[in-house]
Length: 301
Image (cartoon, rainbow, N blue to C red; front, side):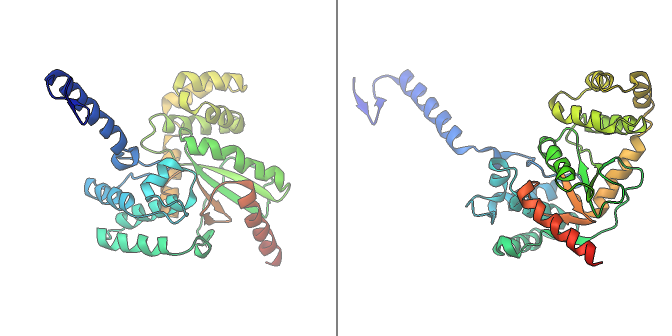
């Protein structure tokens, strides 16, 4: 058998198979999810036009994250979805494109933000007004630090963050409360239904038991499963089903989502500490010092 670089020069069938295998292997090595995906983990691009979405993905695939990972922003979102730096940069791109900025303007803004060291980035933004009356909360009503969470019951990152943020109520007893606000993303088909169900459960005084079950099973969200979990949590299933059928809480879900948009929410989960949007990971060792600083500041006020 005569071979040249591994190719059988006298057997075209073998050569074709070798060529196809080589092309397939090369394609597998070259193609990466972040290079072709139309959505990025934790980033809501709803509201962008087709051209703006193309522009956003172009910037995110070409510009680098500044967390020290040496990856592109889109690459970092896929390989390290908990990275707060790639998320902040991606959200900035979406926000600026929605505001009508050009591709070159957006790229310049991102390059400048990425140039800054992480220490230069503000952990908390300037405060914005948020409506929390009537929303479900955990912790004392008169807590000195209020954490408002805009969340999506079908979002895997919200599922991971949910127990972390609630743990802060126990870490700072009598001083912290967590308020839940709805922000179902369009890409999650069952998220709006789950949001409506949670508000129906809240009307029965059972928001948190259903909240916990839905986040624990976010990949299995459906009307049937939600009603089953509601029954297990001691919720009146017939009343809950009637509320879902009548879409009793649909408008309120939409209202809270719009409130989030107005406050600058562009992805889930997003947290506000005393009205200040938090840029960082929802981890106890990271968040605890920020809460302590807020407690000191509220004491001085």
